[in-house]
Amino acid sequence: MYDTVNFWIDRVNISGGDPFEVLPCLSEITERNSDKKGYSCTGKAGDYTVTVLEKGIFLQGSLAKYFLPTNIHTLTRSATQQAIEKLSDHLHTDINIAKIIRVDVSTIIPTKLPPANYYAYLGSKVHFNRKQLTNGTLYYNTCQKRLVFYDKADESSAKGTEIPAILAGSNLLRYELRFLNRINRQFKMDVTGKTLYDEDFYYSIIKQWRNEFEKIQKLKSDNFMTDDITTLKVAKEALFAHLLQKEGQSIIDEFLNELKAANKFNSRSDYTKLKADLNRLIVSKNGNKSELIKELETAIYNASNYAR
Image 1 (cartoon, one colour):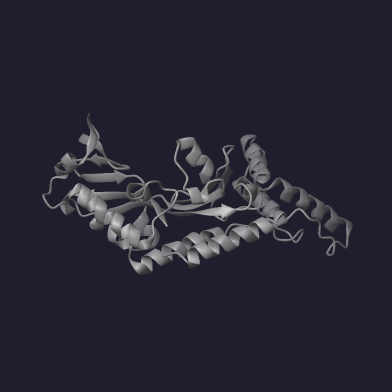
Image 2 (cartoon, one colour):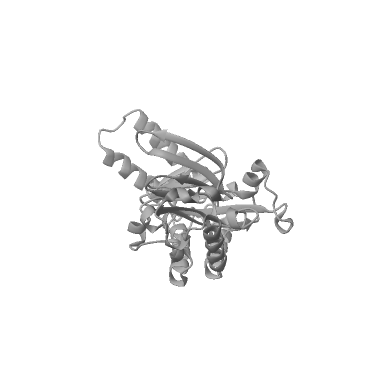
């Protein structure tokens, strides 16, 4: 279930000790000189952009796209090992010992409805900034990790990527968990190319992919539930919660952003408290769990449970 994997190979781990020995293995080479980085070259190795510096080699790209025709499908554990072996042969450099700078865990989820229909039921996430873009992409951001939901069929069409016949015409929701930096600190271990296909590591990172989704607040359906309404105050709160749920998490984010832009409150804690209060309402007892969320939860559980 790997897609993008960025590597760093320190010059001390290169057999000849000279990073520039890799240049004959690259295409489309360009050179540059800068006061900060000194002399460097950039070239291509399949899908990878390879930057060669005095200090080492940086590889940036999709390991799935390097090994497969496209990255519509991501890499299994065994395919990851094969892809790293192929890249090692390509560069005449052992990628197994390369340090992981970034790694994305993802898969496509065929859905009954277009992916954007599901976003309204995905609420806030503690310690993450939720942001929904007009192009149909939903982000949950921190400085070290990012969750992304988007329409893979639309993206593939825009890039001219051919979708396999078996998936043609399907709604394809892509859910990605991106570990963006400080990989060793996040996993509390040294993570190298070889680590990626270690059995224990592989299944633990997929479990984290599922767990991060489970920690997103799930909003409920639009249906009114009047059984618990016993006072005027509760009735008003139920209606307000229903309207919030109908608009989705984005309306809370937009409202808070406008308040911050206008400097309505002196203390940052006021915005935090208001957000917490509104989030409690949006996931209140009013309504039942959406069938779309049930569908998504089942698909993500199955994807993680049967990953190989």
